Image (cartoon, rainbow, N blue to C red; front, top):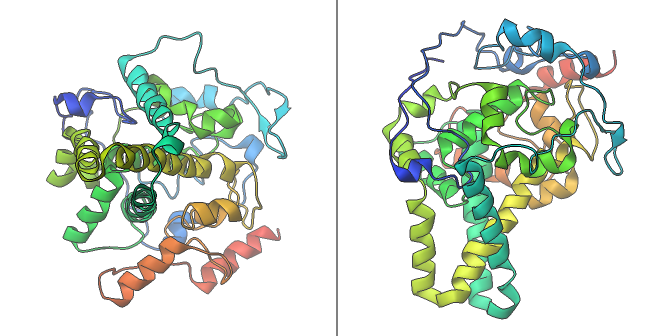
Length: 382
């Protein structure tokens, strides 16, 4: 995948810290990647690995990544096991290996303070919901939950943009991505970059959000330490496919204008109740559902496949997050547009992709073949 590293915008909206994972940086040097096989299995078939002895720049681990392995200078520190915290996460076999303290004992940047401010503000706004309830406002929140959570985050940001599990006409790709912008979880370039780093370094000391550093760190507190992302993953150099498109650069540079405009529109239509439910309750609800995929789905549930990480299939997260809770399936077949691989595994996002395919709008839809699943199943028995 060729990368085009464009310099970040100087817009104040680009630099505002609301769940915006990239820091204003100088232009990184171009990166050239080796050619990889187009076979989805070879891109995602990571095989059996011992998690405790996982090496971050193992060729097996990095076989399916679109970004280069970590620098050799980091290898010695990264491959040395961290001192175990010794505490298991409640009702789980996951042991916290190194609890990371985010809130104390470090310097907070303006980005950290702004991000925390937005998260706190939306939660405080939600506290007013019982006093601002009406049915119209309630259904606005439900509708925006579907629009921003399903169409925006799970279908667009995750399966379409992060993993390229299917293709859409550009007008529809951009429409769904714009729905994701209104979830207030960051612009597409930064969200996708963080997620790709998560898969590259999954549940290692360089994962942006792993429960090996504590449940709440993986759930949300990782958001408030922007410098840690740079220290762990380096510069944002894994989203060249998005950075070369003017639409995504425009959204990145004007990011905050768009949810502000939505909030103003809701207030104009329905007053303060629409603002509380549409921009408070709905945003907080979608926040925590998204974050549960990072936390709960790496702590509670079952592992159908030996993926060498902590990913789990969690049915109740799948119900809330439109199918994203079948997370171990996803880590086994990252290329797949379908996460609920069994007929009984409810996957609302897949049903939408299937419908778009039936209408001729979604093409090149990737799912694991029976042979690919059989080969993974053989590894599970060895």
